[in-house]
Image (cartoon, rainbow, N blue to C red; front, side, top):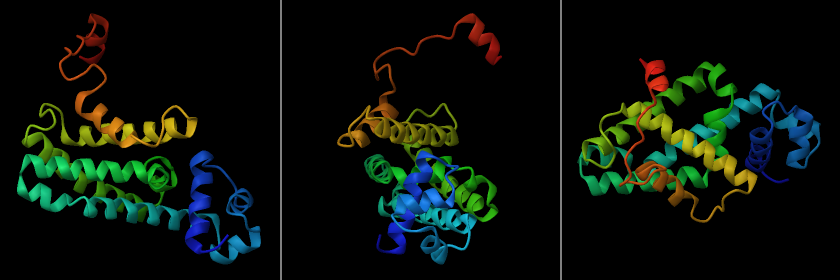
Length: 202
């Protein structure tokens, strides 16, 4: 195993499969001895913190590369749609990094990682709000709910890919199509809630 980044990538893939994996398992996944891994990372917490920081860096880089701030400022539907499509395609391509940022409990327990994650989420929500304002996405739900829905789709994409249920090719388009048209299709009516379900929501 070569660089520090290679070690991080291998350890992260193992953690995505088993968040409880000990250092010995992470070293094995990286193809190095445990002593070698400890020379790079003094503790499991140090390793997790660096993986978390790396995941958040990639998250922010994807937002920037998609032109998120400029698209939001423009208020132009085509520009907003282009930024949204580019950003989500990058997230799908980085499913290992993004999966860790979304699902690993260490991200919730480390104050610095959690604060930065919340800041990036809030930044991203501005793009969803812009998509709602331009008519690209339905405006009658909170923009933050759109964000949570997107992340649910991204986790589903990662899990389905790992299970062999979908191919990587075309996966970004599948995520986007599901976001834009749902599972009933754009022209299909939304099923009404049953009385029992409606009562439970009241």
